[in-house]
Length: 369
Image 1 (cartoon, rainbow, N blue to C red):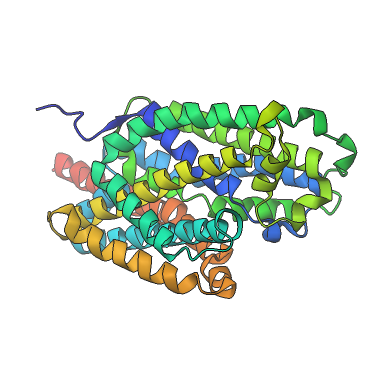
Image 2 (image 1 turned 30 degrees about the horizontal axis):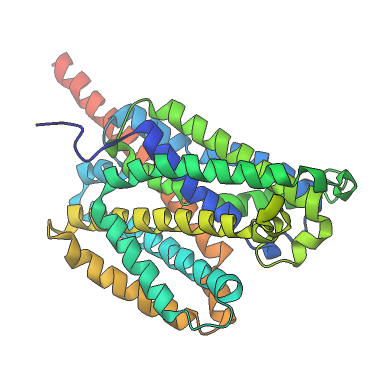
């Protein structure tokens, strides 16, 4: 039997995570950065790097100790009941982030792409496409990520290159003018929106290759690209950035190249492609977690209720901007991400360490007898 079946290599996996996290960057809404001056918007990306490393330390230590087991597998060694509870927590976190991804795509489509149209059918179509992508499996998503990465990287470089002549360095403000604490806060908020840390915690057994190097490459590339995008926003749009609902799309609208005119259609394509991958990946993870803990049924038995719930909730949320604001909560996202990426692995690490010490103590006593 092929031991690599159902797995993807490190490059495919972290390419997939790079694109799903890029979606969060290009769709960010600047309202949660109100207290931060323009230059600090760029600087805070490097704070994220440090926070990201710290958050993943417990998971790294668990991986060194248990090898090819994910966080739920490790919990199952201690208690099958606790494993089911842990699985529900991770599935719930992924469901919530799927909800907010679809909801944000709905806001974008309703205000930018189809401002005068009823997009309810578009929402349902997005969920169906996401379910189809999840049905294709992890390997298909990994292969798609590599191809998509080349397309997205080319598109982003092309757009930013056309904006160089429009940069004005007078737009930048003194660094840390309002102190370091506000910059650290929005950096932590951004980390809270990075559910990819939690995805790593449940996906490592499905990835082959040097995962440690892959992680550092991913977090470094993510930091660099996010910093460059924010740098161009500040340099080109200045204070105009904070007045826009989706600043990256507005930035792309200012990009012009020869006879093609505005290039915002390209960033729209990037957005939709990354959204497809993220929604598909999150649905796939939910289904695989539930299948493993609650019965090996056909994927459709899990996908159907997930798809119906995603569609119904987002149709309800789409009727009001206030509902979207309540759903897309930084506090909820931070709580879920920190819990699933840091606190649960930390607790499991502590408990498993005590268990191992107890076993070693028993062996020592037995040997002395």
